[in-house]
Image 1 (cartoon, rainbow, N blue to C red):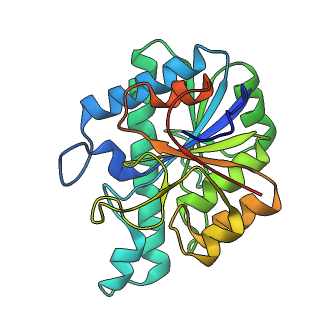
Image 2: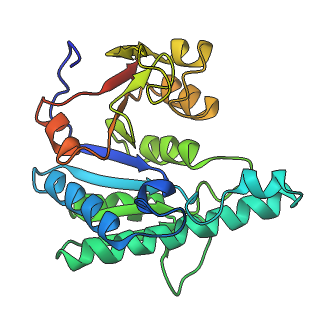
Length: 241
């Protein structure tokens, strides 16, 4: 456990990968897993915390992989953005099934299924205690959903980014492959960049550093993990200045 306990945050960004939604499957969406993550978000919102989310699209299509297989990079990235919209709609459906109010806001206009990104409107949704899911990344190729999460968190005046992963923090090497891997309690942005620790891509880390936006890396697989950190418990790594 880290030596510094997070205070009660009022507005947070939750960033999760698309792969987090596929459970034990090798592809696509696993509805029970989506429902479990929705319950984690519900528990945090019940604390009075305003929540916004960014979900990756790697469970459906990953732009970099498409590009590596010969597809033109810009086209591949736009396809990846569309995958994030599908995941956002799935999460919205699961949240609304629990009686929560949720809005999907897309950086690419598709008015029949979600709202266009208008900053003031998005902030108003949060103030009304609606969960806001930002989809389609930044709307631009060559930028990841990590960068999109950091950008939107900055625009929404979030106090912290929660990065949900399969491990309970940032390690000096892959803890799945190396039994002697050491977990960081606290680590600086510069150290993450210098040591290539893989928390987020370099652009996202640099943007978070410039805006003094801390990142908390925790295990999304641990039941109640999201809420427990906000209550001052749990295991995680805090990335900050």
